[in-house]
Amino acid sequence: MLMILYVVVFFFRLAEDLRAGHPMLHSLRKSQEEFAGTSIEKTIKTLADNIEKGSTLFEALEKHPGVFDEGVVALVKGGETAGCLDHVLPVIADYVGGRL
Image (tube, rainbow, N blue to C red):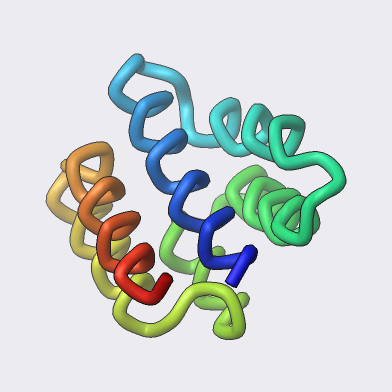
């Protein structure tokens, strides 16, 4: 249950950072620091490492099926493709939060 809450907050914060014009990698590294010591920290680090190596966010997320389900990955892929990820991420947070 706590991991779900972390994922919700993570997506909301990532959306805020992207809307503010921060690059994805910067936002992920910032999130990694903000979530230090939590169960999602390692996942965020791996996401950032994959982005740094050239992956898209949806490609990085799909490597963590225990944290991000297929619906989340599909929504992120759609947001990235359409260029509106900052608007899709809060929707995803609400979707994930519905499991609480």
